[in-house]
Amino acid sequence: MRPLTEDESKLVFTKLANYIGKNLVHLIDRPDEVYCFRLHKDRVYYVPERAMRLAASVARPNLISLGTCFGKFSKSGKFKLHITALDYLAQYAKYKVWIKPNGEMPFLYGNHVVKAHLGRITEDTPEHQGVVVFSMNDTPLGFGVTARSTLDTRKLDPTAIIVFHQADVGEYLRDEETLF
Image 1 (cartoon, rainbow, N blue to C red):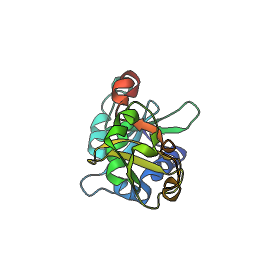
Image 2 (image 1 turned 120 degrees about the horizontal axis):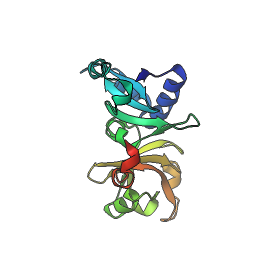
Image 3 (image 1 turned 180 degrees about the vertical axis):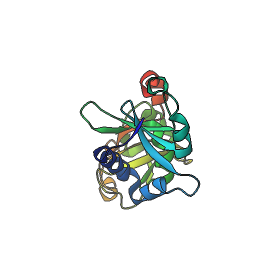
Image 4 (image 1 turned 60 degrees about the vertical axis):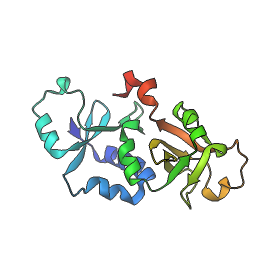
C-alpha cells in the first residue's frame, strides 16, 4: 500500500471531478477525520489516516482491502471508478438524474437510461458530464455519463439514450468475484 504518484493522483482527481466537480474539496478536507487515497494492487482506496497507520503493520501480501475502494487502474493506465464509490459520489454529486420506477430494473441490469425512463434531471447539465442516477425516492442506483445536455433532451424521442451506463448497484450481484 503506497501513496498515489502525481500522475495517478491527477487521473483519479480528474475522474472524480467529472462527477462531483468543485465538491472534491469536501472529499479531501473533511471536518471529522483526515482521509487519504492509497494504491494497493492497482486499486485506489479512500482510507482514514488512522486506519492506514494501523494497516502499515500488515504485510502487503496479507492485506486484501482497506477503506473504500474508489476504483482501479487498468493495464493501459486508465482509471475506472467502481460502484463502491457510489456513496461518496451521491453525497457530493454536482449533476443528478432521477429515473422512474419502470426504468430502475433496466438500469440495474446494465442498460442505458432512455428518455422514457427519465423522471428528472438537474438543470443545465452539459453533454458528456458525469451524473449520479437516483430512483425517484432518492436512492442512489449508479452513475453514468450524459449523452445529451438538458436542453437537448427535451427535443428527443422517448427511445433516445439520455445517460450512458457506467456502473450500478446490480454489479454487486453480477460481478461479485471481480469487484473486490
